[in-house]
Length: 203
Length: 320
Image (cartoon, rainbow over all chains, first blue to last red; front, top):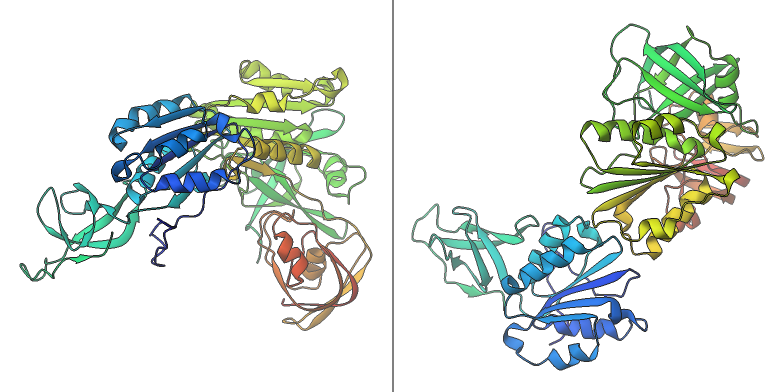
């Protein structure tokens, strides 16, 4: 899968760049699925010995074993493959708690993963503008229902039904860095029952 | 009127700190309280130097929680344009002066987990206010303060007596140097770095931090520039329709003000950006000295910071 092109939108909607090696004391990568490609592409321009001080936390999701060998061949100082973000979270938190200034953080893959890892990194004291990110793969969204506050992962259609309260929600581009989620607003509040056909907007 | 607003004050104390530094205390002439400020803020002191009006920025070094008075410390610069010499030679207790409202271009980032401060010489002053503010909220800080020798290290003994574990002193005469690399290594994530001191020290700290991978957002510095002297030049002010002469020891901003034109300013030291002025036409060379405009803007010939920058050439027309 090639690089993602996201349509320009309101300022609240996050934008992503392209990972580039930066000078630092240690390098922490958090990626899922096709995000592995961003790491592999970046590795082509990384200086010798760069990955010896790198720690890669990777969640393959549906890509299975497709990228594992290639990531291993980068020979990173630490490499973790996990079944889910939740499973990787204790490791990420421990890594950030033990980290020192000079750590560079690189995020790659889906918005849900990057947003949540960004939450942890900024919580640990890294300014969000100093964290690199590159979008690859699915554009499915993590959305918070503004009514019940429940979060639904991997939303692909608009509108969609809140997995917590059942309201039909319109997916906005309005994004919260604190929640790492887009905003979902009841679409039939004015005319209950008048719900447009869901359209596959995020794939 | 431009600038940070004016407060009439009375000098209530002048203390000789060492052979180069004097400390001045200001209280409101009407007896009221001064505006509150945050650690790292400065005030612009207006001096009436026998016909020449001087406006110099000085960091506030008193406790920000104490609004009954402000104190500043002034290092005498015998080679300078005369502001510090005026303060040293002519300012006496009881004198009426005028200062600006406090402006902070060097604030603490209170999101930081730890504040790592590096001071050189008179660069200690903004940290005095910051440390007072931080210790009131039990903030975590570490100060590394370099000076030529103990006699010239203003406030070093007070600081190390009060904060023995946080304050580290280095004296050039004893060949003591800050081990910056070692100091930056191993700082906990979320540490913010602050540096105030001579130009070379600021560049050294910023470059070393950048090479070690510190985010730009976590590295703060403050350096007030004194407007450099240079060849006199002529400027046309298009909006006010005036042609003015900038003298050898005068800044462009001072010349604009002397012509009776109200131009915006805050720091008068090339860092706040307030005096940014559009260039309408020019034929000559800009001598940019500010820290505000980018390198591209310096090369572009469309902007100038009149507080510290000069011009050499035939014509300069400004949108003022």
